[in-house]
Structures are given as C-alpha cells and as structure tokens.
Length: 192
Ligand code: SF4
Ligand code: SF4
Image (cartoon, rainbow, N blue to C red; front, side, top):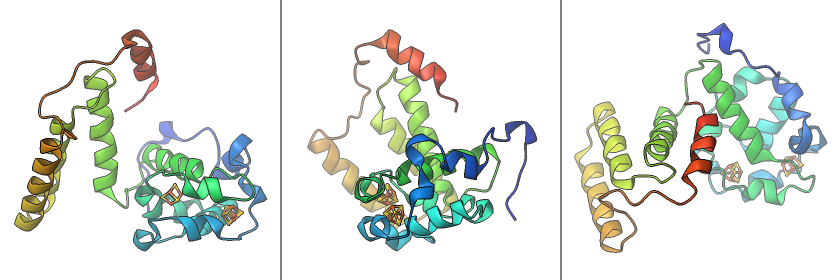
C-alpha cells in the first residue's frame, strides 16, 4: 500500500479531471500503442506508456502513482510527438510524478527522485545554472550511502574525467546567466 502522509497536500484535481484538461486530452486515446513503440526506455518500465494512459483513464491511481514508469521516463517527449491524437503523454507522466510526491507515496525509483531534487537545488543555488561537479558529487555520495559499488565508482570517475577533459563538465561553478531578475521570479514559483 502506498504511504499517504499529509492530507493538507491533497491535490486539487483527481487524476480523471486532470486527464480531461487542455492539451492532456487523454480521453482521446484509442490504444494504438504508438507511444510505447517509440519510447526508448520501455526496457526499464513496469508499465508501458499506453498502459499508463489506459489505467489512468480507468481511475487506477494507485497503480500508476506507484509505478516505476513515471520515474524512469526521461521526458524526451517522443511519445507525445508520435501520438496521433496529440495527447501529451510526457505531460501526464510529469503530472503523475508531482502527484506521487504531493501524496507522500513511496517513490518507486528513489535515485531518480533524488537526482531531480539535487538538480533543482543546484539550479536554485546557481541562479539558474547547474553546478555540475557539485551535483555529481552529491549524487555519487547519495548512491554510495545506499550501496557501495567500487566498480561503478571507478566507471563514473572515468566518465567524469573524460567529460571534464572535453569541457563537457565544469569542476568549478560558471558565471550566473543573464536575466537574473526573471530567473529569480521563476525560481520563486518552484516548490522543492
Ligand atoms: S499513441 Fe496516443 S492514442 Fe496511441 S496509445 Fe499512445 S496515447 Fe493512446
Ligand atoms: S517522454 Fe517518457 S514515456 Fe515518452 S517516450 Fe520519452 S521516456 Fe518514453
């Protein structure tokens, strides 16, 4: 059973109401499976994208909110692009992630949720720009605390070194981007 901890954080919409809204328009789904056949991450999912839409329309909130799929999804939007009915499947999955957190449901993929959180914290601390090395260090420590795997650590260090050599990852923070006033306003709207 999912863990529901805080009733004050109950959503203002039910899943069915949300799915009927604007560009989500999930009720138009006729289960053609084009979304699932184009998704690059189905190998790691416990529900396929078309199944998430189907179960959501049936009101099976618990099944979709506790699934790994909503956390495995990288929001690449291939499914959304392929859908013949213009359903924003990636948007549905994003909304389900937020709902799972709001309802205090145990996250099926805690590493992914933690990465999202660290990433957002880094963006906030950097005034709109991520501090890559800090993010990697924090996330590596989080993973090591969960499970110490020397081979994975070595592989990650090797990868980090290659990225730094090619200038794809900075060791020190970079300059804050332009438009700081606007960025601050946006960041204020983001809840952790
Ligand atoms: S591609 Fe669109 S219509 Fe087809 S199964 Fe997926 S969500 Fe439904
Ligand atoms: S947005 Fe998510 S569900 Fe859609 S294709 Fe990409 S990874 Fe798959």
